Image (cartoon, rainbow, N blue to C red):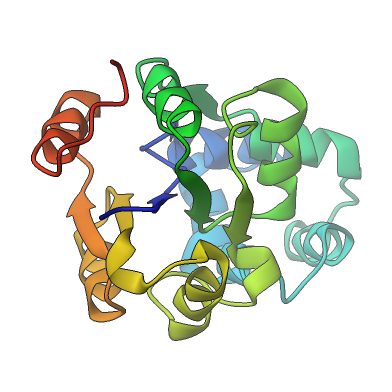
Length: 203
């Protein structure tokens, strides 16, 4: 029996683009998208931010030092975060599961900037009972601490939790922790995976 659902956010509940983020931050800094990607992603600075090891202000200050010019926080927040496009077909699925009494837990690698941006502009996280996010857990999937935080959040046995994520490596790690876990390839396939378990969130 499934009691809790764990959902990834990026490319499950909402589309997003690191390419767009690098392009927009690059415009702010006067750099090409590729140069910005090297500063943010290839260097690991973005991942330090997603792990919550540095604050928004420190992220801004370190990027300012790297590009040799001061960067205002609010424009950087917008350039970094205005990259999301909710997957509308997922909303009735999530809402249906909520109305049928299942516990809903978000399990996502994300920054505080992205998380606050989404909460302030969209409503697709409102049905969730708990958020396990990397910047609070101090770790990113597939590192153990974020899965251990998920175990504490599901309020059921691991085998009673269903986890979906678009990254196969993260799904496999979830299975190691005992979750029923499937790779997310789209809303229709998710509905089939749930139907195989006797669950129809759209009934």
